[in-house]
Length: 120
Image 1 (cartoon, helix red, strand yellow):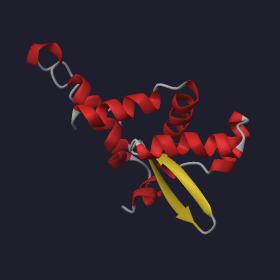
Image 2 (cartoon, one colour):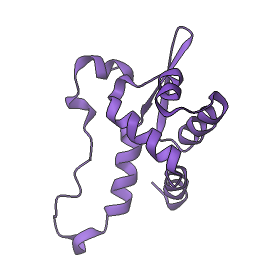
Image 3 (tube, rainbow, N blue to C red):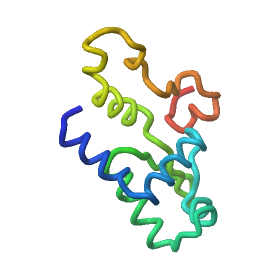
């Protein structure tokens, strides 16, 4: 990851609504949530929600999966792990402090959560 990508991702998260949406989608896991579910939960108008989801997606923090006429948004775990790795790559003066471990390991997720990424 380079600094430009890191700044783009951090800027996308530097908004109260987008940060809350991202944290909710992390909580939902790889199954994701639809804009309808998110809109109802956050009480956001569709245009506002769409704008925030677009910003997070363009920053590379979310992935969208189409299922019929529905879109399910989920966090891009690899992107967040890359961002965290970038932020902590020089921590602890090069000593092993445990921060080099990814924050989330989707390979240990349940089989229906892995369905989102196309892995089984």
